[in-house]
View 1 (tube, rainbow, N blue to C red):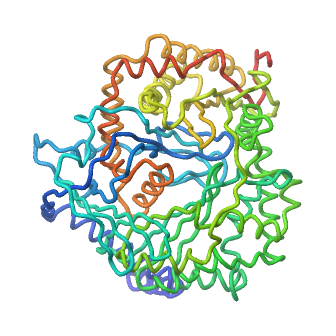
View 2 (view 1 turned 90 degrees about the vertical axis):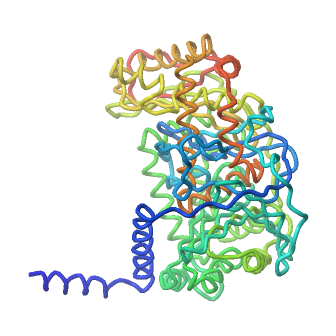
View 3 (view 1 turned 135 degrees about the vertical axis):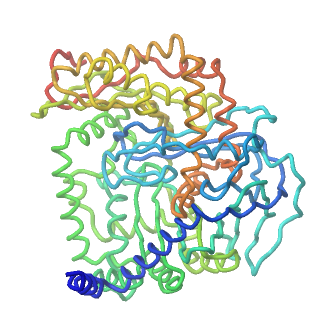
Length: 598
């Protein structure tokens, strides 16, 4: 019997592609190494040398589509830091650093175990990491707030390294190392002038690239809504001399992972390859970015899939509510248009439209890149010029005006024959560089971003049993800022749920949190932060988020100190500024009882 099982396994293994067998082998090696790391002694970290001081300041993450649903997550944060960035900084990696009891280190607080926040996508693929925007709205954090120098975990307190060094044509800024840390972030400039952040990790033969082109679906022309979303689905549908079939077969053969995703303010690329296949795999990425085919048959096939998705979304109350909320909040603005388009606009998109969008938005001037894995600065500099150097020098982006939610009516009800209604609510928020942003971020964790520990969950779910999930989040875009949230409940309980949510928002605005709530929130937010950096792909996503939002290369090191610096008075002030309950815009999809739209 065991022999038969063994033969069956061998037959199954023989049927796998070479690429899949490689990934399974790498996965097995990683599992073994992970197990050994739990039992073997940890390496002793090197002592510190540090780079130049940076003025304290911070920032947060970008979000996406009009209004998407998110559960209990204070998910994203991003930079927006003021001042000259430190060119290279080091951060602790949770799985590798162990602190002796009672040790005093700016890194230690980031290593306390904690559950990682999660986000549920309202449309499109959910993002696995908090740093990269996705088809789910995410909570962002990061103030440009003043933080006392004594509390910020800044590299200023150690000796400065010497000026810039050059490595094989790549300009590499001074390398700074923090005590008890294992990961260095290097600021690289290629000979062709393309900038990137690099974290070298040679213990596993993998390379992860993350990159973003500023613009996103806010650049969709009028009448062509859904164009950015369309092009993200076309980037592996043939390039150069390879049609869609041969291109995808080649990617499978090389075990390449490549995907693209649009947001309101950017178009994101994700690329991963084994070191053994790095050069041919990077050639596939170069072809996809510089010479996509947009063949008529592939365009028509993808168009049918997108139209089928739209037909499905029109019957999904969460997607309908998200789309309707955005349209009501931003009438006539790019943020109010449907990011995935309509049946009419998607049907009208042509190969020429796709190529025009690519040429306008895929350029070196609006490009940001992060690399994590088995590559050094010299090799990365060559990769940057080879893969991205052939793009247009300057993007032709249409300016997007600043906006605030300005609904004509504050309660919209869209009837849909479903057993429970979906509610989206929101109002104007605080911008990423607002001095009160971090305080608002901590406040929101207490109010509705902290999952089962949040006030909204306690009042709506635990005390009254009105809904399984209720949440709130902050969403700072490039040109707008929101405080928003949602709940889904049976039609008979919609009115009571909305009333309870309003009351909780008002209570937070009037009195703020308790001391215990604030301390618990800060403990969770600082303790769970290190879990965002436990894999190369997570590190790459987080760093791209920080680079994209200009938070500064030292934000990883400063972030927990910024959270710890938030006081009860800060949160009370931010809550009063933010939570204007009379301005709340509510959209309901379903057959709610007892509501009067208007």
